Length: 179
Image (tube, rainbow, N blue to C red):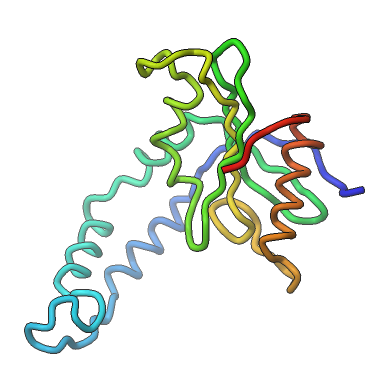
């Protein structure tokens, strides 16, 4: 029987020192050379990369993004020694269907931020409340705010087992859909 802890509420709060370190690293980027007029033919376009790094260095507001992300209920749980982060938003409707939505490699729970509202509260988005879902959006081990893995046998099948434990044993769903 898989062992698990009780889910703990979790707030994303990246320390200022980590953000300062990122800015300092971006300030020190050593740019590679680029073949003249190659554009994207041989990899990433250097002028595009420079614009992107400048944006991250001078204009990107991580704290505003963090506030947006933290509007949703985040949790962490330990299943068989693996720390897993997930969002769990209950649907606003007569009988929301539980649905686990997972990202791929590479990816992030963040990919689903725009659908959280419409799927959990369809009436607020012009839909029928009967179409509401309880959403569970985990971060794959090693991604987002889940812990990295420390063993070789972590594969899609093992992760699916952990997520089944999350849905059934941790959250108590006896029936649910998976995306």
